[in-house]
Image (cartoon, rainbow, N blue to C red; front, side, top):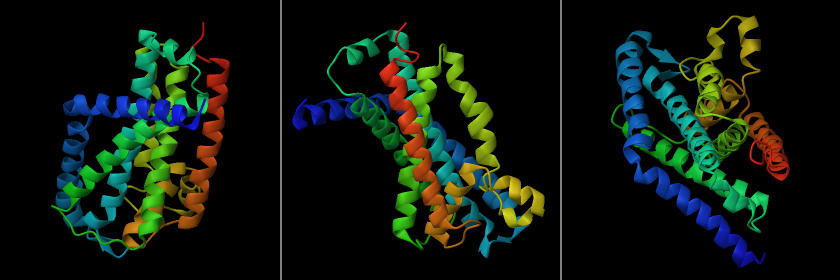
Length: 257
């Protein structure tokens, strides 16, 4: 395929994905905004006023980066897993498989569409947070890199989940039993410095901890882990999962029967 044809195929997938989640905005954009607003009110205002400071900042300011990242992670993942599995379920994915579109273009298109939703939700949550606290950016490149790479990582993860899923129930297993626990235990609501030494060590094997703290460093300038280590780990995870997704596409895993 020519570069123009490749770009046309890529942009077609991306535009379709964006139109899909914006058309049903009441299901894709509104619920995360409402949920995060409740977090701000309950954890930030009501509970945070009793906790006081954490990491040298008031509790509301401390949890805002984590809540933004939590919204980005779940939305990026959910968009790709639901969209690609729906294509499988409706058998419209076969149109892509018989076309000359390379697998990397298919993967890139769906991942970019998932990132568009995840980053859009992240922006909405950020704007909502301004009604509750003031945000200052400590390191803009670190903040942008962390949120973009994290969104891409979980979009790829959603793609793999969609390929492995055989029924609609399968696409909710990972978010419910993997993503949610790891996110809540990833330092969104607390600093791991508060934990005993053993549990600090256990927390270090949670990949979401690095993403949340990398983003928090970009905004507040504080982190429980080295932010450059966080970026390195995200890049490694993206590389590994992308290779897995491309190999699965090549073999038609979960698609060709």
